[in-house]
Image (cartoon, rainbow, N blue to C red; front, side, top):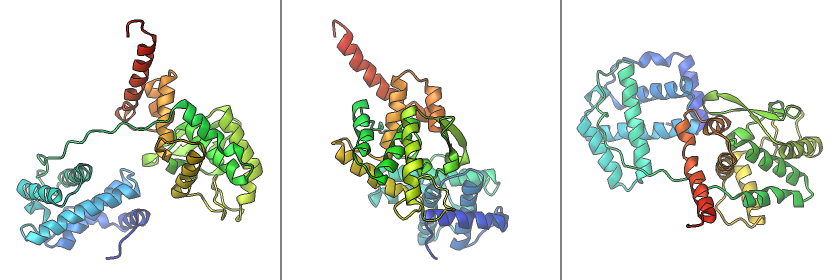
Length: 331
């Protein structure tokens, strides 16, 4: 079988959905290919109905295909209704013996649970054998955020270079920190997504959910200068509508932005590990410290659940503790 990259997989799944591949639901399969076909139907559901990203779908595909191969290797289950809790526990133990990290094993376990829940919802199975499947306990790592002084140094660095690339980089960094967008959302922007007069940007988040995010005057000035002075020099095809372009006149990639950020962080003398997500974390942390509500920050970040935003309260709590210890006469 030809291995598909995530976006190609999504396209294939969507194509399958349009061709009516969902008819395999409820069918009893008697061989490994049939079990994988059932998995593919589940992946189609994730892509079409739940809007999962290509990377997530590929990870789930690999996780569930490895389960099918495990079941085939011992020959005890040729269909999903023959799988029981003991077999799934053996699969989890096998993952542990192979040295997978707790995080990876937890993801694979979550994929198995979700898949069997889907089979129950579609009435392929009466009950899920994965309900009691044990999963490693994982502590959630707090996100890394730059200090406000570090952010200022980072954003000022491109301005010291009088090049078209520097104007582009300045606009990207200012916009990312001004809005808290994901890097995938940043590089996906079209020219029409930016409203300079209204000082807001329209971006498409996870699950194809659109949101409008305001930005401040410094981001506006950087964007205006890039669009007026620099972007026209990058354009090689007048039909290209991407906002941020590479030297070849093509849409800048996430990897390309990461290399740009890494270089400017180095030039700014920032020793804190800095990734595109670091600016998103910094935005959220600084907004909360500045008085924004958790609900507001949730909307800016595009989190479906406020629980995802609450992790930043740990960072602001640390800041409050520092302020308390500096201000209280008996601390």
